[in-house]
Image (cartoon, rainbow, N blue to C red; front, top):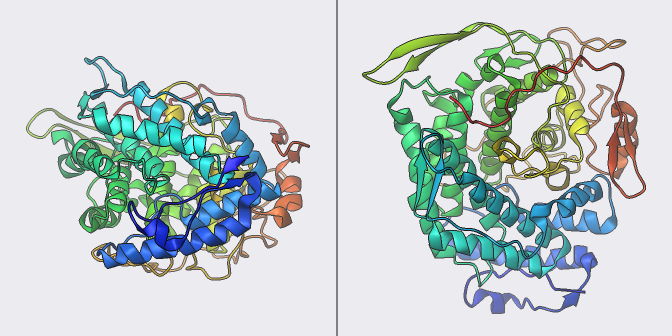
Length: 526
């Protein structure tokens, strides 16, 4: 038996005002408890508004409604949630009692005593324990998450190293903020001290990079470098109710000079409804990283009423579809792109990417469920490549499930559990109508394309440019599984077999291409 999963609404008296209590419950507290929590969250939002905050909490990658959905679906044993939760509970980082090893200074990069692996392992342990607490209600996991986060906020003072320190600040900054967002209302969590750590250790490093790019030519650093910094600053802004930081990232996403802004990251939109991802000319691992990071930025913004997913006629959808098709082994076009390199007032040069790099169709990262579910379920759009690759990657794991090196920890993961959702009829559902002051327009900039073609596979053909495609779940082959009603079609289309324990086994469909040499999955080099 577990203690009642409870959400403290404020750090002082608001908990008593809402009448929340602690008691003994099992994993199945589910829907009844969700109702009480929704009422409590409403009071929390009201309190935040009274204090001038325009942001809803929790409101980074997961909202209160998301957490309630996960708990209820897992309680019911619904597919594919049960399989996603099984991936979480099997991960060594998701075990209560994980002991943190906080450092005063974190180093990443050559010429320093690198210890950043300590940080990312602890961050993922905090996140996984916090997420597990919200699903199964065991407060031991919340206690573990809080202990990890409190230990780091009491110790960490700086991020150092080579230019890779910018990657460390960006990646682990947005991740640790997401972990803390899940326990921010617990009385034992040192909220003010954690805010101080975000705003004095992580965010300034990322903001510095976006401002001067380490004193380099603005295009010297590939797309993922900007996106790590953007994710950190946005997560900090939302967590700390800092509208200026949020507005800065929204502006950069739309109009930034670096390669992480959406038009620079996705420079060419084709007539086939796909848009070329710049870093596909580099290698597959970094392209996957970039797509995952841009999705992370879009999701966090969406949960605060800011629609970057739909910006510029859903340009990100077209770029993500391109990377999905390419990663599945499909042929994609690539327009030669030359970027300037060098240091301001120092050396200079250029580099041209002329074609999409080779891919390993077995390479995967836990990035697809979030993006596919947004476009097909929230928006009701057809995204056949996204749904196919999301099904292939399911059930998504998290840090520790994709290798021991940093690339396997660049995303928080567990998207099958966290982002699988039922299709909604209102394309704007989920934003809650929130538009924080100074954050820019929250409305879509044009409608998303519905003409993305089907994968070029034997026995199938893609519709020509301009041909109509049906909404998700129709006859277009868009078969993302987001609930029990989709499972049969999803299983048949993707070759996914449901096992007795709720786990999923992917079987190969046809002959795979000869495995090519893997490129690194992490943002470890310029």
